[in-house]
Image (tube, rainbow, N blue to C red; front, side, top):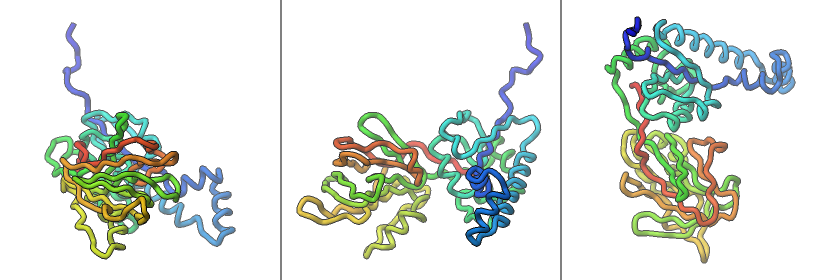
Length: 304
């Protein structure tokens, strides 16, 4: 039997990713608009600007959805559901929101192109979401036709000796989940040292403008941080404590693709590894576990 359909491939699918607005989070807590307004008003604050930002995002969301060609498939996902969402290999992913949304999403992707759309340039810097809402239609068409310029950004991966691993776009943190000291052994190139510190981060060039930059600026001699496309990372130990058993010589360095950082946990409890500030999505890093942190094979493909 011959099919009436041309056995052609599926129509392209656009995945529109957003995150809950401040207004939506307030409604989750207070149930209704009047109750949320009363809560803020009783503390000298106004719900009006929060609601205005929410409405502006909804307008931008509608505009992006309208820009998707009618015959194309579409899917919506919010940030808190990313870990359960199944991306298709050829998806065109549109991230509508602030830069952090792209970072939150990057570890769940596997080569899909991301179009970062900034709904409010006066509110968001737009480093990872550089495009205007009005450009969405052209960008989606160009991405599907493979005539878009792609900027590949390096990611960082932490792997444990039990097979677990974690990806991040900005940085991974290794340390104690509270403000207690983290105890571990650190191995870098031919050097090894036992540490008691506030933990450490391993940052990419994308993350070099955030947490890594803040730590680096506090040091007498700043470490040259990588650029977003560089296949290298920088590690920075936070507040290493000198004692008879712990040192402070091995507190920063550059990692290339062939030279990962190795860490051996000496934490009885509370040891964690997490990425991009998402503390709820972590790997346990208990006593004796070995972590290797280095340049990830995966990269973020960002429409530029």
